[in-house]
Amino acid sequence: MIIERLKQRIEPDMCITPQTTPIIYFGNYDKSKACTVSLNPSDKEFVNSSGCLLDINHKERLCSRKKLNKNGNEDLTDAEAETVLEFCNNYFHLRPYKSWFNQFDYFIKQFGNYSYYDDTCVHLDLVQWATSPKWDKVPQNIRQKHLDKDLPVLKYLLKKILR
Image (cartoon, rainbow, N blue to C red; front, side):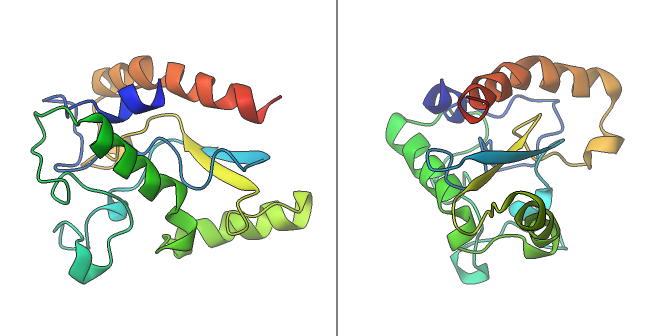
């Protein structure tokens, strides 16, 4: 289910940040014992404050379609999806968005002795796509479409964490 999810093209008119890939999770899912959950990934995982895609020269955080030489209307291959997944798994050991995640890490360390940085906690989102505009500005009918498509993936991921 995970690889198939990652292979999906960017659907038009869904307010998905251009040239991005779905972020199935942040951190090492297979090693994690706990999780945090938010709405959807920030576009700052892929773009700078000017809206330009991060790349090797700007220390990318995750694997964009640009890195894979794919455009938004192409499905990814299994190998490309594995590359995207590798970036997700190694997220907290590469270049995490610390101004967001360090606040949560402090809390989960204090109250559960978990951490993103030692792979005991993974971060999940209700929707796996970064959106432009931000989620609260995405029209309600588009948000519902995202939720309908992505909640089954979240439920699948939560089954392991909740065991």
